[in-house]
Image (cartoon, rainbow, N blue to C red; front, side, top):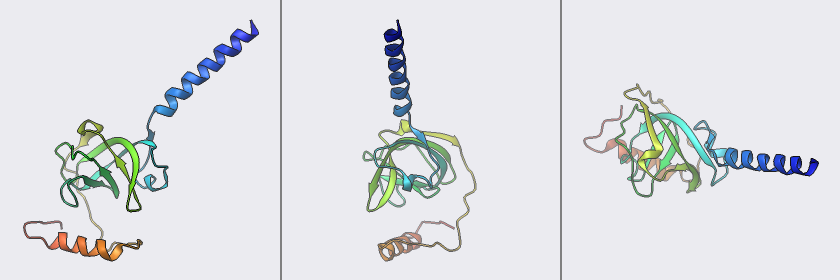
Length: 146
């Protein structure tokens, strides 16, 4: 009788751990940089750079990069509040959320006001390259950011 209970408890613990560990971890966008690569994650934020502005496969929410190899994103605009589910990956030292399909993104609210800072502090060794790219993007004709 005792052995059956122990086996049952072990089975239940295994099932619970299996389902708990497979669920994505809810993370704030600033916590993503500290998470292990391959971790399933769910985050929420406001779009600050929509797909196509800084690259065809990426966009940003509150400072966190969202990446799709297939460029599969729903129609997004700056100021859209979204929830995104994916896996932590890394490119050029920056951790990001990698998604598979547009279905991994849920639009929660549209048209929020996004305020950009007057100054940006950059602490990366590639900062000169990124500053030149950002400057080029801001000066492109037909683009209004501020």
